[in-house]
Length: 311
Ligand code: BMA
Image (cartoon, rainbow, N blue to C red; front, side):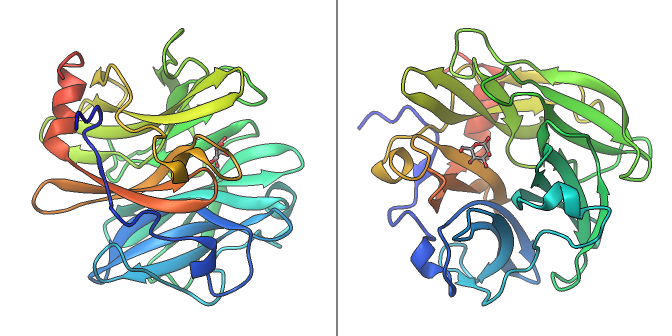
């Protein structure tokens, strides 16, 4: 069969559903991923029965069969500095390891809108909040796993709410609190598959050819939005420089579990694991209802970024 995508879906997708969570909830979807103490670790976005999200850990030896913690790990904060901004939930986590520390970026959602939160852990037990890095109307924050000239680098997506256009930006910080030197990184493509808005999906993955950045693109249609995934390569030394990007999306809703759910036609990755053999396992939320996994050869994705018209 002709496969228009470099990804191969796991044959028993979805790998995690509401019924795999050991407590009552509405859904489990967009998930961060990392390796921790020789295990695959996912940080799941779980939406409770009130419609608010929190984050819960799941662990696995093989990257497919996960055991989910009995209790949530990161819930909306009661700290007065955070509470007004996280009141409606903590969403869409991403994990970035820098040395021994795992930084978690997430969407803080409250009555004023969405902001990007940053926190850290070393043991996946104690979680310490560091900052709300942006004002409202910003989400899809992913942190680079390395510092550049002693500065942390964060990719964000300001705007894009209520059907507005939204592009990907990049900012720099000495301490993860004060952010600046912001500049545009990637624009949505008018008329294309990401004509509505764009947002970073997975923290950049280092390859010999550049930083590989998976991002999602949204197309507005007569019957709602379609969320798909593309990839770009960023310069190894100058992360604000795009070397190339795929001409078309590399993963889009196709299977029934990606097409049907609380929010139809959504594939939404927030985490991936690069294996030693060059295979990348991408974990993605499907239709805001469950979690699926698909694999690709990283070289195939890089080739599509560098020669976008290649088949
Ligand atoms: C985006 C985010 C994601 C969600 C997607 C589709 O704006 O809120 O959490 O998966 O919409 O509903």
